[in-house]
Image (cartoon, rainbow, N blue to C red; front, top):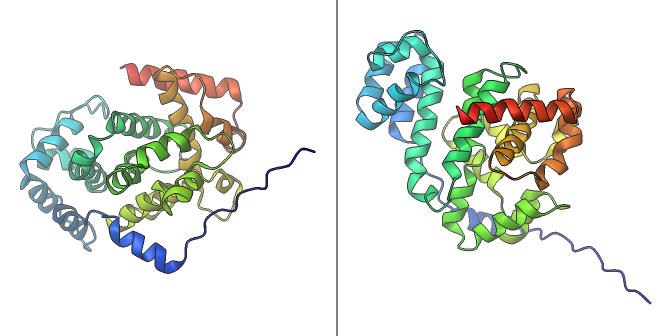
Length: 288
């Protein structure tokens, strides 16, 4: 007689255990420069010159903004000659979102060094998303870029907290049947999407960004009409972006894409051949 294995019940931690765990996970406080920028932006009449002065006070941040503004990513006709000029060229909202991405990279850079290509993948994802929303306009390119950078930001935070997290992360990404976040939660009572969404809310990022971070591995969300379309769009597009990045890195198969493919294609109204075309276009962008 063959014995059938019984399904393993998921671990359901009590609230006290979760509260105790969260106290041991350090979510970086919102940096003061970000607080100042958001405060200026939330005024009835925000002043672009005041925003430029806030940025210019941090030499490293200012240099990073100038480099990004004058890069091929934006392809601006004019080159920014100063921080004030960069703010004028980009606009205050886009400047603040781009600065947020620069700040998070600097804030978590030490932790991210534990992850071989974390920032490279984040940058490619951000670039891919800001490109694809011009084709599927679910949100502005700068919001898409911000989501791309922050999408997996919970990974370096959990890597710092749990010595075994990198092994969990590999196992989760290779799991063909169980949701990636469920594998994480079984091992650590939390997952990178939850931690990333918490950081996004703590840092005052747009609501659709924090919500999309929380749900970006929950593909059933794509069928949920009650969920904001910008959130569903970001989830669908990031799945394609991740597939393109994996193909660019020479990995022809993707466990995560197999979980998402049907619902992503249905949401975007494309088929497998069109997915391949999109991936090829993105790989050309990565090469350039």
